[in-house]
Image (tube, rainbow, N blue to C red; front, side, top):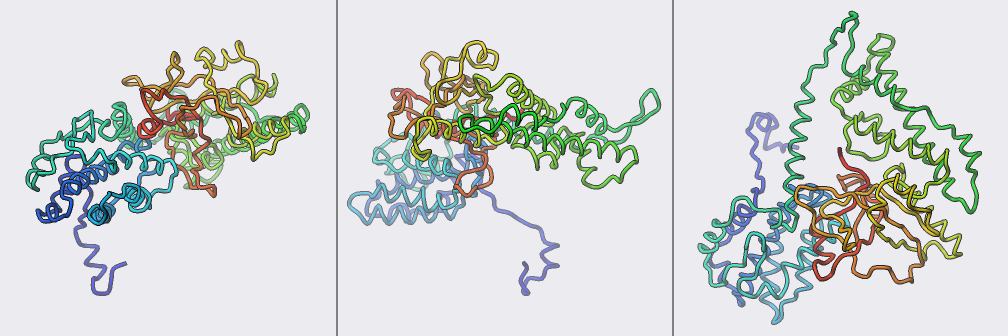
Length: 512
């Protein structure tokens, strides 16, 4: 609030000026070094180590800021890292490098990744990422002359003999546009940024389209919203008969998935009721039968703009799809459960189809716990990616039978990388391919003490949507997070840290 010494009227009539961080690696580094003076660089007991590590720290700060423009590939949550974070890190770096004979690498890493910058981080997977990033910056190799910070752009640590002006000249010679690989991302990340920006522009243009009534040949008039509402009503199926399902699939000790089925159908019934009631209310309002409330007007605008209405999302599963794709996805989910009701449990489960995925995974654990007579807290999940020929549901029915323990699941997409069917490991994504449909995965419950099938793995988080970020739950994890799948990697070609810095994750559904 304005203070008494600064009247509110003056504030309202003033020109507001904001100070935003510059865009691009070169501009960020330039801003950092323009804040130094010659004595600050030279007046140090260990000038060579101090200068090299200072440049690396400024590079690290610029990298953290620039990763935000890549959306969820860069950070699950877009954190507001500030200049003060870098300043306190520089002060600590200056002190610890000069105060000890041996540079305390672990201390410096902890202060930067867990305290100064890490204090803003709320997502555990982002915390894992920043620790991997700082490992590349605060390492003994940084003291070597010509240490490479980015192989793709050939960015090296300048010689420690440079003066401040030479540092500034070195930075000004950097390219104005850099590849995403500078920020440890795949070149495809540029496509993700372009698609996101284009979608925002198209959404704005779409919201400007006329919403007035238009007459047809018969002389009647209708709005685009009412036409969409009628089309959706024609597509939606009838509600599930919960009583009949409970009779066909009763609650049994050895059939815990029966409970999951009934719970899922109840959730979808509630969603269908809301959708049908809202669509009917909108049509009645446009026909003059009921009052057109602001909520119904907003519903009509959303239908016209191909957006999922807020009232639908209140009772629905997380999704970023436009309305047309969202309805198709909803119908596919309902068809999946209809086949389950009619034909029995499938040989492979479409994991994205579950309203509450965690309940299904808990049921898988509970089923094994009862079968093996092992406490559920002593059980964990192991994973095996099957052959790609069993990628679709049709192939699953034809080629697979249910496993003795656990379940087969399909419908996941790998973002930031691809699955190599020949080598059965995570591999670099093909140019221009943002998402790779994963083959079927066998989720196998086992005792936690049992050795895993693969030793060299990347612990890949699974998210419900491409947004990745969600509400922070009481478990400390995002509500968008589902589970962690251990994907095999080739240790001779890459490491788990490499794929974490690539932003690799599995998604249950795409945004299109």
